[in-house]
Length: 572
Ligand code: ADP
Image (cartoon, rainbow, N blue to C red):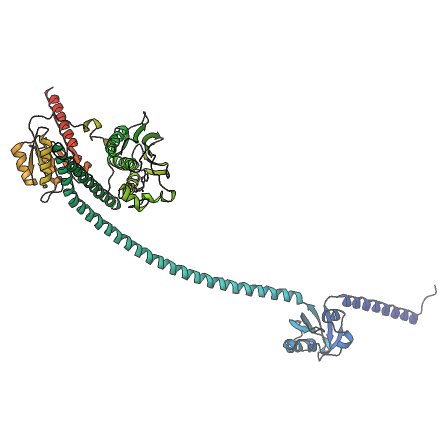
């Protein structure tokens, strides 16, 4: 190939450079056109002189219509001023400026764009617009969420504060109510105490004449049976029944008031159950009307002895038995006893009138009877079951009832074989059933000193004991008693507790600590039932008024037996 001259070479080089320039420009144009950001160029006054395709895509205006207009014209009113400041070339700020601004889309909507701008030479500005609409909207949504959350938190806080205040108010009210309740409870307890004291006093006042009525009636009935016309004898019997009923009611009311005042004490003793059941059957036997009703006993042979309060148990069983007899005309009243684990179940079943289901629970309430007519027809006060249930609970047991009207009822008392709470059990020193049989073969003219402020008691004991060979000396006060003890050196003393000048307990203590009198057996004879205290102070026994002649004679003969065996022991 012939060598090129220099002009040709120059032309070729020029041509080559033009081609390379065109290729480079095409490459840059393609690059710019395919960017997602708007690339713009403004003249010194801020009017657009170049835009890429992204301008159309982001703001919707044709490029040809936009060129020659200031870029600030496309901004929303609020951001226009800031836009002008940025896009008009500034010599003072040659560095890059950046700001988030609101533009107006061709369709009227607001579009958030991030404007980056820089003043270049020739007083022009170049820059880009980056679409931050989505980011901005997301941020706004987030902010809205935050705001809502804050509102809700505030609402909750307010609600909580209100609830708190309400609670404090309620607590304050509760405290006031509690204070009022406590005061009411204390007032009620004080009232109950006053009522119990009143009842105890009244019961004593009522029981003293009642005991006299019963004692004298019994005496006349025994002494004058042969000479009295039978009608008068019947009348006396009626007096006795009414008096005993009245006394039972007084005793019930006193028991109830003691229960209410929490003054019932449990004195557990160890004793076999069957003799107690026999005694109860024996007691209710006279109330059985006619031949058509049988009293039956079904007691397991291998029953263990019980350790519980014998008197309370006796009272419960008597109540259940007498109710069964009272409400049964024909058939049988059966008392059964069996062991059930560590408990004894004593059931009293009858074939009587029965109790309707709705009344079953209420019969245990005080003064409640199945219907008003019951009182008239069968008598009673409606206190027995209530007291029995209280006693059963005090013994750690329960009373349950099953009944079918017209068929019969079964009341079941379940008590622990060994009473668990309370003082340790002591050996039963009460009368055994054998001792209850009257012993009339007393020693010749043994002196019994009766210390009692009630002359009727002295009179009745004298009348009753004289027949059995005892000589009864009376003393109306503790002082007189002391004198007569010295004078007569009695075989035994009966001692009342509630005496006007000196308390019987004090006298008992004195007699039992004084060398000359401490060996004389003393029988506490009172309406006050506190055997434990009596035994602790050294009494031989403690009997309740009204005086039961047979019981008194049995106790006196027990004294005879005890002193005989003591003398024999001393001689050996
Ligand atoms: P009272 O027998 O003195 O009325 P209670 O408290 O012992 O009092 O008995 C309450 C009531 O329960 C009785 O009046 C009677 O209506 C009913 N009741 C008790 N035991 C029996 C029974 N075995 N059969 C039928 N009703 C009974």
